[in-house]
Amino acid sequence: MSRQARLVSSTLQYMGTHPQTVLITGANRGLGLGLSRHYLARGRHVLAACRDPEKFPAQAAGASGSLRVLPLDLEDPAFASWLADQVREDGRSLDLVINNAAICKEEALGQWTGSAFTASFVVNAVGPALLVQAIREALTDGAKIIQLSSGLGSIAHIPRSPDVYTSYAMSKAALNMLTARLAVELADRNIVVCAMNPGWVRTDMGGPDAPETVDSAVEKLTSTIERLGPADSGKVLSAEGIPLAW
Image (cartoon, rainbow, N blue to C red; front, top):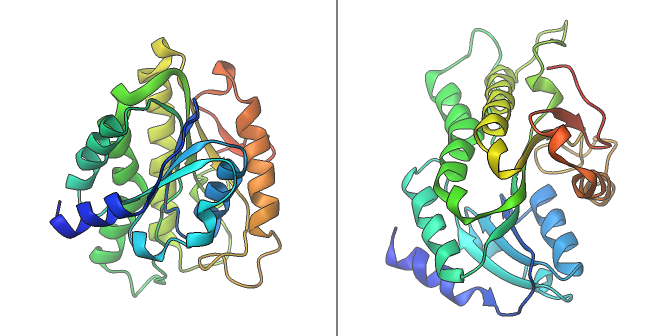
């Protein structure tokens, strides 16, 4: 971890106290930013992890919660253990982890490249796996881990028409499997692990034609997260909490 990254994380801190702590990856834009604002407005302590901490909007630090912005590059496996160290230094246990960070490489059959597949799997599936492994001791018993998945990750429902999202879809299918495996691994601590499909949301990745706004998606997701219990662990759910075939 570079000295510059450490300086960024230390300067972008807003101190406060609250018993519930939320870690959100990909937190500086789109759904990650919307989720960060939601939990800050409800008095949570938010650890907002993102590739470019300096781009985290300063106005998001308001409301009644407290915020610490941390650098996180899921393509670099060293960041997982470094982030776990920061959580320990923060002196808080994690009540909720939302693995939101993802990339989407668009390549049609005939144009596929190994680099696109590798990057998709590293960021969208391997990164969350290594992060949860690194922070597992910091999780409270009964904590919740939410993996933001996608309908494109469903093997049960493959689009009939060709598309350019194969590497993304495969990585999200892997994320769903990670969810099922973690649910078993962490069951003895009553930790709930779910994958959730937020739907087609109007973000940089979703594009301007998406029918769902960030605010409406966040409202649905957080309402469902609040209701999740041990019986839901290992499932893939819609934003409304409906089990999905995958």
